[in-house]
Length: 257
Image 1 (cartoon, rainbow, N blue to C red):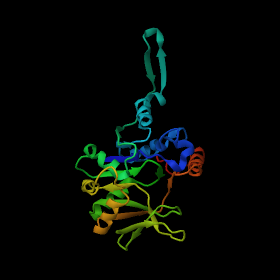
Image 2: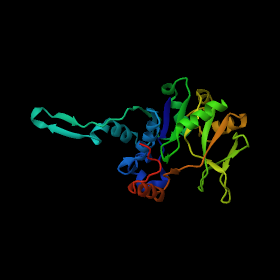
Image 3: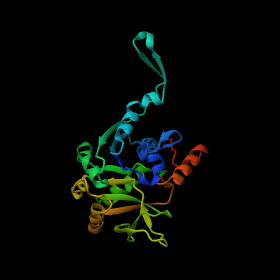
Image 4: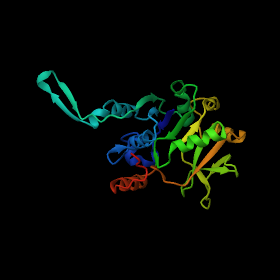
């Protein structure tokens, strides 16, 4: 099963870093947060990735193009016409498709643009700025069990995100803005989507979390997988520093490899 990761936004709320590089390329422990997300999926058996690039997309492509250089010892022999030898190559078992989905394209538009790479099959989708210890296999099993078109992981956190109103059977009935006194769950990404979801996206200007997901909710086709484990986005410098401290401590909750 393919994993689609949205990695094309500007990351304006963490502008201290994102003016230099795409937000998913901001590093935790000298590795981009995008790498951490992919390692989490890979450790659970998912190695086919489609990255929706946009802002400074060349930096993401260049990083993957030189991945083995960043992770291996290398000898450059200039006496042999610039011959290069790669030692102890530690490559990943990944297939990575990097797609330029545009600078100003909204989240739904980015998903729509990679439809030809996904094909007519169910796929996983998440955002390139949050790490979790969630097992995507559990989300997939839940998705298959209920048989609806979309499953989103519903996280209980004290942060300002779009709120998921859910009924007793975990149907998501609506999205709305989070109130300060609200203890409702929020969308944490780590979704499973059926290919029919592409039909709900009109074009580049479609915000996936608004029109498509709201329509799916109205139809009863959007389910929430409630998760109470570790989940943390990297939306601000404070959150980045917190994740960095977790990694440096050797006890990063999301590290499962």
